[in-house]
Length: 217
Image (cartoon, rainbow, N blue to C red; front, side, top):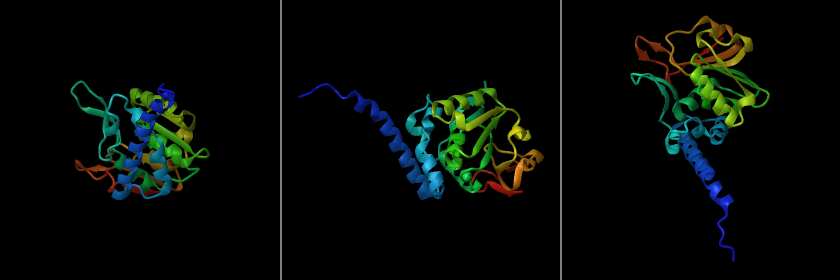
């Protein structure tokens, strides 16, 4: 009789726990109507989003309504975050993303870009941009560690200008609130392309899904 513990089993336990949390998250998102398509469901079951926030309790990263703050300034003002799963799922569903599409994400973090890469597949393109180099560096580390580094382009720059070097795009997703729609965003869309952006008007957010504005070119 062998009393030596099976290290492979012990090492597999954390991964199984992560998978269970993902499955529970997806189940909740489906019930809420945030996840409606098989492609989005598969992406959310696959991406290990907790690896983007290693200093945060794993269970918190999979709570459907919880955003995880990743950067604050000296006064504690929130500068960057990984959006709540429900918000990410609803925006991706509203964008209507499919295999082979070229997608620009404005406002990086890594997790959303990984979901997009899963959905568009090897024949698609995902570009994610942010003006803060610390944010893009963190996104690059996450994407590389989870196997999406070769399937995404991370760009540091002013998102208001888009990323013209990889344009045109079938879809543009803006994951930060905006007061208006800069011309570059619509100019970098293909004919019939779609832009999803959270608009803030008169100091009131009109943009967090499900009221996120979808525009067609």
